[in-house]
Image (cartoon, rainbow, N blue to C red; front, side):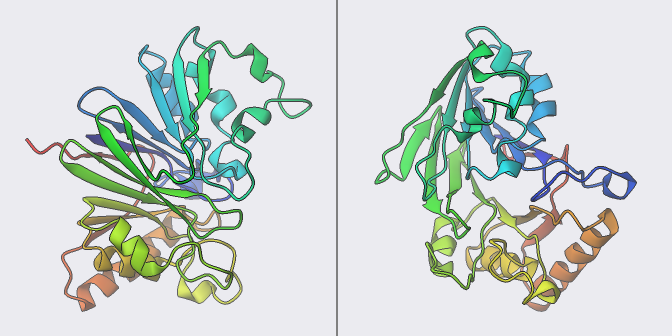
Length: 282
């Protein structure tokens, strides 16, 4: 299993010289299994450059969406494989409060986008996973999903394949002021023994209470969760668009102080575009 980050920002793309090292595209992660299966987590602006790579193939693509907020679907109209004749693309919508599984396609209707969804040449399917089913297969991978704490709700995912386990929990507020869908302890069980936990770390304690309830976690809490679930690595994700590369360096250094004080073996890093991790057990 190989994972590559293509978009790591939350809320809105952030171009500019101060955002080069970590990148300014919104959420998109690509996973390639040993059997050749391509799994994509979210369709933010980072999916455009991923599409330039995947358009060279003709195999099915599986897109898992956490939810329908624009920063997680806005790159889809620029994803080259959707214009490939007969290319199989399977979209797995997040479990949102409103039953709107086709919002990723509706953004291409009316006056919102110049190319209508009817012009797409690929065979695009919205995969309906029953609400009561939280475990399903994609290629050789077993996918488990869990409701996240975010306005409108959505899905976190665990992907187990090739003797590795990855947990993707973005746009998630571990301790929200509103009614929680999932408790901290259940997230810890969900991501137990993950080789990699990718978790929302958009804010810090110093940002509170101004941003309490906005649907994102503080970096310190992400570290706490990673240690609670005995994850091997933690990728800080969904970087605040206001944070420059140097600011993210400061967040990472701050988090590593927590790890040092706890005498933990957890490896913490800030996710960056183009970063690839290989989880092969050879």
